Amino acid sequence: MNNNAYKENLISRRKEYPEKVFKGIFLLSALVSVLSVIAIIIFVFSKGLQPFFGEDAYSFLEFITGLKWDPGNDVYGVFYMIVGSLLATLGAIVLGVPIGLLTAVFIAELAPKELVAFIKPAIELLAGIPSVIYGAFGLGVIVPIINEISPTGQGESLLAVICVLTIMVLPTIISLSEASIRAVPKSYREASLGLGASKTQTIFKTVIPAARSGILTATVLGIGRAIGETMAVMMIAGNNIGGLPTSIWSKVRPLTTNIAMEMGYASGRHQDMLFATGVILFLFIMVINITLTKLTGKLGDKGRSK
Amino acid sequence: MSDIIKFSVSDLNLFYGNFQALKNINMKIAKEKITAFIGPSGCGKSTFIKTVNRMNDLIEGVRITGEITMDGVDIYKDMDAISLRTRVGMVFQQPNPFPMSIYDNVAYGPRIHGIRKKNVLDEIVEKSLRQAAIWDEVKDKLKKSALAVSGGQQQRICIARTLAIEPEVILMDEPTSALDPISTLKIEDLATELKQFYTIIIVTHNMQQAGRISDKTAFFLNGEVIEYGETEQIFNKPRNKKTEDYITGRFG
Image (tube, rainbow over all chains, first blue to last red):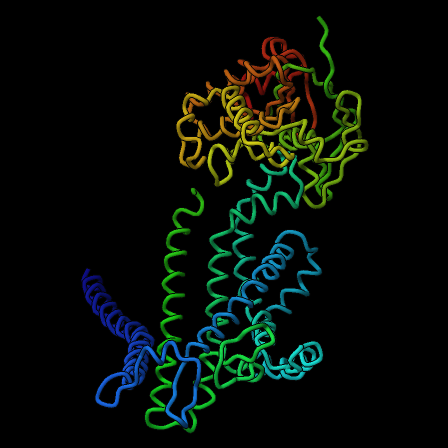
């Protein structure tokens, strides 16, 4: 009896103590990322918005609509960079989503096991390659090819960027699409095949529509990856100092590379303007993330029943 | 009046790898009748019904020997699975409507088979839903998700979806096992209606159900057909001791 009372007491005290400590550790860990995000936002925005306020303010309108970037003459226009970034991303998605989706279908539905055992590690490896290697590959292989065929005789171009970004978004799109295709209930496939549909018809009319929420998520994440890519793109974009891209052969200067190229030596207003470029980039990423949250929230609930 | 034979099964064996799931099945299935397969779980009745529309082809490692003919044509040798399945429709154990509208569910089959015209599709959808005795319940919500209605309604939508491809045969694999008693009765009534035009084969766990709706009954045990005959005879005067034991509830 005595023994028991002693035990109870000890256990309750023993339990309470580490519970609180661990709760604190968990909370602290969670705070690291939240605080980082807040710190980055404050830092980038306060630096990046600085040049548009005060006495010697630079017109925000000129900044956002400008077609020339010439820090030497105090000219900072990023519109052509925004266009370059968006076109490069669009191109990578237009090419990458169909290729990625078909690959995912192949892996999930059609390929024999031995082939899957070969393709999947290859795709995982693709995801793990550092972006500087992609850039080097682009510079060493893709740029020379475009050099040959381009009417401008210039390999560094929007097309080169699109090619490399397409390869870079593939792993994201493939793995997420594959997971969502595998999650489609077997009963849908049986129902379709039972109605006399072929395997291909079943894939396109039943499986892909049923997996669309996952495929959309994959696409949005792919967009995020493409628009934020810096290193690989910097090596092959051409990074012109002004002018809208007029064709796939044009040089471009995406927002990311603008920051990466000049941040090392910039100072004063020049440096602030690079942060301002970062603000624009940040806004794009935020739009993408909000879209993603909406998509997954909405389709997660309704995807099956819509 | 003697029956017209729709399917003739001879010496059918089916193996999953090394496991023999069906043993030497011989059976003739009558046209425009309801044939019920009964037996305990794992006896092979579901496996057998799936050989009739070749759904077992989809499972890896399945090997089939013997012969099944439909109207005298060998369905494994002289017919491809796709055209077979347009003639032999199937209703599954769990209602499995696609995650689309009721209309699109029913129109799925016709669309797959190349029907594009809106007015033709409208007609098929209405006719199929009427035949499946669910038109009145869903006519105002054809554009709504098929997953938003009750399980019993979903199953009748699935039957309508099958009817829309105008099959000759309807296979029902325990179509009411996931439904409540009232929905079950509706499906049974429907099956008795439909047998005027369709050959129906139904797998069921529910012996009363087999007794209520079928013309012929086959009793399966361990992959073999123990007894096959007129439903009345099977239920009232079973010839085999094992059938009698099962019918009277002594095992299974």
